[in-house]
Image 1 (tube, rainbow, N blue to C red):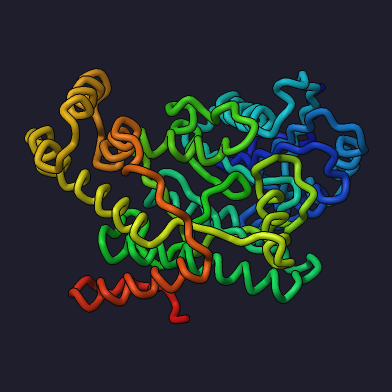
Image 2 (cartoon, rainbow, N blue to C red; image 1 turned 180 degrees about the horizontal axis):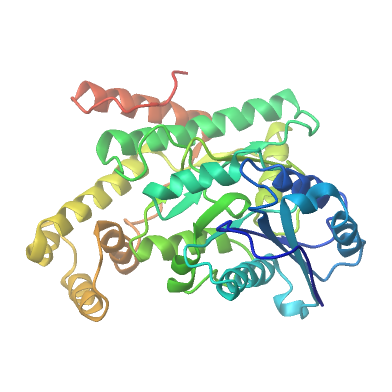
Length: 383
């Protein structure tokens, strides 16, 4: 069943696409936060698609009731009920269906510069979420928003909060290495590191061109980002874009955020350790990708440049064949495609305990600075 609440087509470019299963308690907050977006008005109402899949609670009834709420002045809400077979009843299917419905809605109403945005049913969008994404898209092709824990959620245990902060410092340190060695011009510092389904935005025509969201039970968001990069898309982690998400441990997806929250809770309780790749792994990966980018920038001689880097001839030949069949638009696409052909750097390094990995990142960053590498904007904070 498909029901739509709203009037004539607005001038707005955006459709927010939300998969939901049994989200009676969380969805109203999200919908109201979308109705309060800056720039939304009776003349430019924001489109929202909710794909209610295999719901056994009052999710759809709650959404129907919201249609009579004042949100109708600034929102066009389309609710799609779906009963998915068990083998495909996962978030990847539901999110793809929501995005496809959003794309079709824009197409049906003749919106040629439409933007698809993805979020989750338990998220809460700040008033500038849509406008900040649209502004960031002026200089990029896909925008990942920073995830922040919902301030209205119960505060985490201090030990868990400290663990969150140390893990964030680790990933900030990895980004700081990249800024020292091979800073991405389309994604300058300061930037965050999130590009997950709770906050993604991209043009509808690009979404269609890359084949849409992969039908994966977990990791469908990262797989879409990979498709965009393979096509040469500029992925931006804009610090002005953020969204509040719950830290609930009862999740819908194995391997998703809830799984990670459960893992961190066990670490905080001392039941297991938290291990991450060592600094030398990231240094080698960043340098490899920098060298490949430089090879591409050498022009038609890039096969010789790769040969001088020591890549196997079979990999170079495969890359030549691939580019002959589908030319690379830029260095982003070249590096992503080559990465898929070349495979891993070598044997997977032994992961390190979090604190050791942090200390090694600090030491490596200081060594690189001493060797004359530039100081990145928003460098990793001191311990």
